[in-house]
Image (cartoon, rainbow, N blue to C red):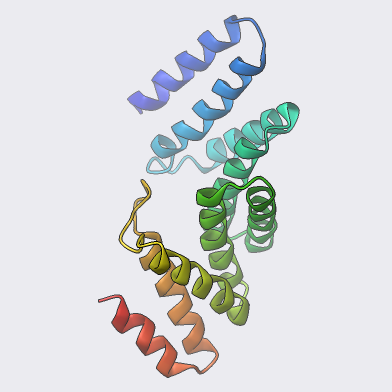
Length: 183
């Protein structure tokens, strides 16, 4: 709660500054940063509001990088909120923006989160295709054990959803291989 209070004061100070692109980028970044404090507090409405504000600000600037980041976080938020179709749409937008702008790390996050939204919608073949590609990329780059400042390893999240999707389509040997490789 203290972090959220600091954020609110900081945002108030920002509004006193001359409005320019630098200020707007800072406003976006601050909104994304405070999500880490709001999530454990269960402040879902506030999170949705801040993501909406950040998206509008990024669109105003035509800042594809920040807009892609916002859409990745919206994908995860919307999935957690049970709004799976909206999550999928945000994930696809994030992935398109990331790919168009060469934002590899954001594209990776977009593929992980989009796959999770697909899983929730029962699109298991699409999950397998997308997440198998993520796992292959992480393995090939030697980043399978990288967290990228995430709370959990992307490779573990991806492997879990991919294995469950394999089970759902009857590919039990592939699921077992994914699980055993993750040990």
